[in-house]
Length: 83
Image 1 (cartoon, rainbow, N blue to C red):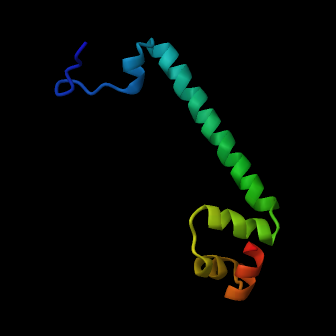
Image 2 (cartoon, rainbow, N blue to C red; image 1 turned 90 degrees about the vertical axis):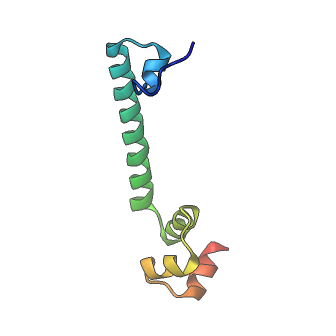
């Protein structure tokens, strides 16, 4: 079945054929799941030691120089903590 994209923008929930109530519940559950993941990430950061903070920043794509600037470490200490 073809959907007229030019006349109406269809969301993923529309394409799934969910009722408006079910779509609202699904969106609420998704928002709660995202909030829970953010809470875990924040708790991980706040309870992390310096080595874990360096690892988390590296995983997030920061360079060694950026990590050093953010945490106030020398390049030597950043390299040492990444080993």
